[in-house]
Amino acid sequence: MFTLNCRGQLWELTYPVVMGIINCTPDSFYAGSRAAGMDGLLETAEQMIGEGATILDIGGQSTRPGSVRMEAADELKRVVPGIKAIHNAFPDILISIDTYHSQVAEAAVQAGASMVNDISAGTADDEMMKRVAELGTPYILMHTPGGPEDLHVNPGYENISLDVLDYLSDRTSLAQQHGIRDIIVDPGFGFGKTMPENFRLIRELEVFSVLQKPILIGVSRKSTIYKSLGVTPEESLNGTTVLHTIALTNGAHILRVHDVKPAMEAIRLFRLTRGS
Image (cartoon, rainbow, N blue to C red; front, side, top):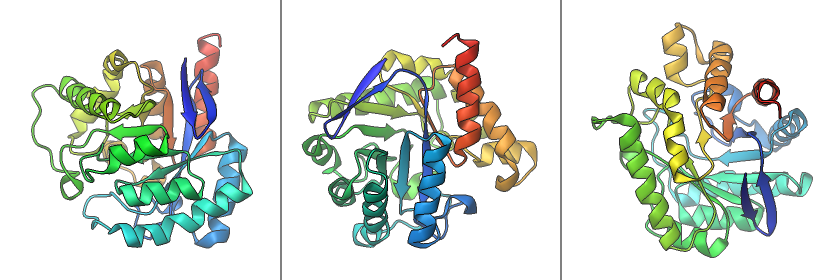
């Protein structure tokens, strides 16, 4: 069991939970995750909460292959109003801000977010870890092979699982040195990794338990799934659920998903098989 302090609210992670993805972007790879205006944002949030999401992850910057890096000022305009609206409408839901800009992280927490999800693990903004420590929120750090411009460039790995583990171990230690107490690790499925490497990460996910941190897995509707099956992102829900089930079996604690209900069903059945 892990206990995380989310702005004074102690959250006990006693069993796997779901993080619902809400993108305040016009160009995310999966159209179903894009919130259409404030009404659409609140409707999506309400649906995800009703289906069992514990966390809503709000992002304003697409990280699909070919996406262009957005400046913090533009990202702020996209995410802060939505976070305020969701926090006001659903004050008990945990909100995560998906950003690698420290300025955006701070404004989002002030607007109602209670954790920071940084795909760059602090490498894109030298102030990020210091700012997160000051904010006192949990910090999700993910493995990527390079900066925001190189998210999908494969550098070549000697051993994908051990290389990612070494990276996450180093970034976790650095975050702790900055004073961040609550850390969640994400192996970065799909970022700068080949399809066989992605599948190996899922297969060997248990290796990351040595970090003694909650493990987040983000495989939902990604290209490794739909390209392997010869389908579209819209047709990849079944494949996503299969990988979610394998990830749960191998130690995942948080599923970051586009589709909350199927993920919750996978967790429910997984727990029943474990007698919990």
